[in-house]
Length: 380
Image (cartoon, rainbow, N blue to C red; front, side):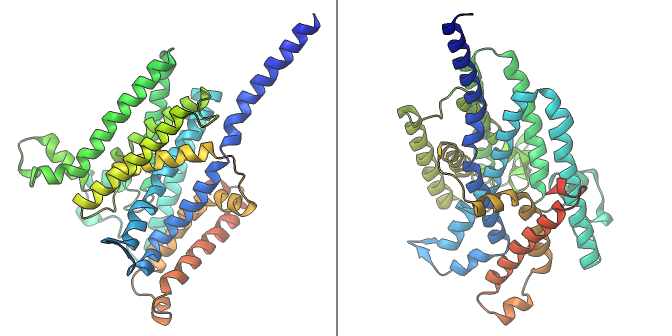
C-alpha cells in the first residue's frame, strides 16, 4: 500500500469519526433548554408568575405573557428534544431500539408516574378524584388514559403517541432514497398538521355551536379543541424534529449560512405573528392548540443546536434532573400546595415563591434519592 493511500484512508477515518461526534457535541445546547423549562414548569404550577400580576406591557399582563408564551413552550420543547434524541439513536441502532428499548421505557414511565400520582391522591385525600368510578364508561376510561389521570403526566402518553408516529415516519423514509423527497414529505406533513392545530384553535370562532351540526367530524373537532390533553396538538413536532435531524445529518447546521439565517428570521416572525393573533382573538391562551408554540419551540431548538457555548456544571446538573423535577414537583403543586396554604397565609405575597423553591429543591432531592436505587433510577 502506498503512502498516499494510507493518508487517504486516515483522512476518511477522521471524517467518519467527526461525522459521528458532531451531532453529540451540538446537543450541549439542550442542557440550557432542559434547565430553563424544567424550572419554568415548576414556576407555572406553583403560580409563581402571579407575583408579576400587576406588571403590564401596554395592555398585556406580564404574568399571563410568562405563562402563555414562556412556560407553555416547555412541553413542545421537551417533546422535540425527546424525539430528536430518539431519531438520532434510531438511525444508529435501527428498529430494535424502538421496539425493545424506547417504547418499553416510555410505557413504564407512563404507568409508574400515573399510578404513583393516583395512589398519592388516594392516600392524601382518601379518594380517586382523577377518575369517577360511579359514572364509568369506555369514553371516560380512554380520556383518563390519554390525559395521564387528568394530570400533566399526559406528557408521557403524548410522547408515546408521537414516538410511534415518528417510527412510522422513519419507516417511510427508509423507503425514500431521495433526501429532497424526504424533505418535501416532512414539510407537507408539517403544513397539514399546522392547519389541523389552527382549526382546533379557531373552530369555536367559526362555528358557535358545532355540537348541533350535522357533521360528526366538526363535532369531534370541537370536542377535541376543548380538551387540553388532546395529543393531536403535538403532531407538528414530529415533523419539525424530523426536518431538524435531516438538516443536522446533511451538515446544514454546521454554520450560520444565509439560508439558515433566513429560516431563523422566518420562524421568529411567524412566532410573533401568531402570538399577536392569539392574544387578539383568543381569551384563553393556556392550551397547546397554538401555532406560536410550534414556531417558537422550533426556533429554540435551532438556536440550541447552533450554540457553541458549553453548559456550566450547575446547568448540566439541573438538566440531568429535569425528568425527576417534572415528575416530582406535581406531588407538591397539585396536592400539598393547592389553594390557600399555611405558607401563603404566613407569608402573604411571597407564599408562591416559597412553595416554588420547596417544590423545586424537594424534587431534585427526591431525584437524587431515586438514583441510588437500581430499580427506581430508571424512572428519573
